[in-house]
Amino acid sequence: MSPAAGGLDALAILGGTPAFTEPLHVGRPNIGDRAVLLRRIEDVLDRRWLTNGGRFVEEFEQRIAEMHGVRHCLAVTNATVGLQLAAHALGLTGDVIMPSFTFVATAHSMAWIGLRPVFVDVGPDTHTIDPARVEAAITAETSAILGVHLWGRACEVEALKATADNRGLALLFDAAHALGCSHRGRWVGGFGDAEVMSFHATKVANAAEGGAVLTDDDELAARMRVIRNFGFVALDEVVSLGTNAKMNELCAAMGLTSLESFDEFVAANQRNHEAYASGLSDLDGVELVSFDPAEANNFHYAVVELSPAFVERLPRDDLVAALHAENVLARRYFTPGCHRVEPYATSATALPVTEDLSERLVALPTGTAVGPAEIDAIAAIARRAVDEAPAVRERVQDVIARTAVQR
Image (cartoon, rainbow, N blue to C red; front, side, top):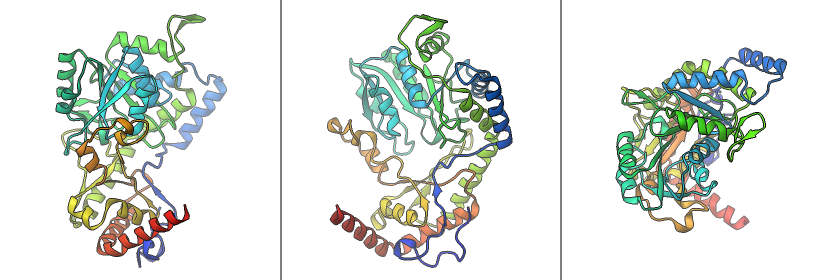
C-alpha cells in the first residue's frame, strides 16, 4: 500500500491530507499461497472431515513439533485456551506469577480457570519477566511461573527454571510471539513444562485463529490430549473433566499454508526492520527494539522505545495520534499493563518498569503488507511530528477537551 500521491505537505492532525489512503495496521494478516490454500479447503470439503483430528491437523502438529525440536505439539483453538489446557493438565492451584507487561490474554487465561495472576515487573532492557522479582513474589500459594517471550525475545529461561526447580513450581511460557525463534541456540518450544504459541490472524504465520501447546513431557502431552477432547480416551469413554480445545481442519489448512510461506514472511519482516532502523536512525530519542543476531527471530514486531527526553517533548500518545491521523495505526503495546486493568487493578501494586515502558513503547506496522516506501513515509511523519511537537500537542489536547465536553 503506497503513500498517497504528493508526499507529506502537512501533518494530517494539523489539517493536511493523510499520507495513506487506506489504514496500515500492526499485524495485518500475512497470506500464503491462495491456490494451495483453496486446494486444501476443497480437500477438506471433499473428505467431509472438518474437525476431530483430521489429517491436516495432524500434519500441522508434526510440522510445528519438527520445526521446534520437541516431541509433542497439540494444535488448539487459540493460545488462550492452550494456556488453560496446560495449566489444567499440570493441576495448578492458587497463584501463578507472571509479568504484567503482556497482552491481557496471558492473565485472563489463568483467571478464567480460577487461578490468581500475581504480577511482577520486567527487566528494563529485556522487557521480559525479571527473575529476581519472581523469587521475591513466591508464597505458599504459588504453584507456577508463567514467562512471556516478548517480541520473540526469550525470557531468562535458565534463571526461571532454577527458581522453579528449587521451589517445586511448574514453569510455563507464553510463546505467542516466538514462532521460529531461539534462545542460546535452542529453539523456543522445549523450555519449561510446556510452551504455548499463537496462530492468530495477526501473528507471523497464522491459522486464521489457532494455537499450539509444545512440550517434551510425554505424560503431560497425554493428559492434555484427553482434556482437549472433552475427557474422552475412546469412543463414548470419558475418564476426566475436559473441554473442546481442538483445532479444526480448515484452520489447520490455513496454518499449513502459512508455514510454507514462513521464510518469505520472515524475510519481509527483517527487510522492514532494517528499513525502520535506517529511516529512524537520525531521530533522537527513538530506539528500535533490536534482536540478537546470534539467535533466530521472526522479526514480526517493529517496536520503538522512546527516551524520557523524547516523551517530555512529544508524549508517546500524541505521536500515536499523529500517526493515526495519517492512517498509520500504530499500537501502544502494552498500555497500561495488566495490573492496571480490570479485574486486576483493584489489588494492583506499583510496577515501575512496566509503568514506564507502557508510556514509551510504540509498535509500528510491518509484515508483507508494508514495504520500504511505506516505512520511509512513516519515518517522515515521525520526524515532522517531532519538529512540530508544540502544535501536535496543542491539537491533541483540543481534541481531548472537545471529546470531554461532548460526553
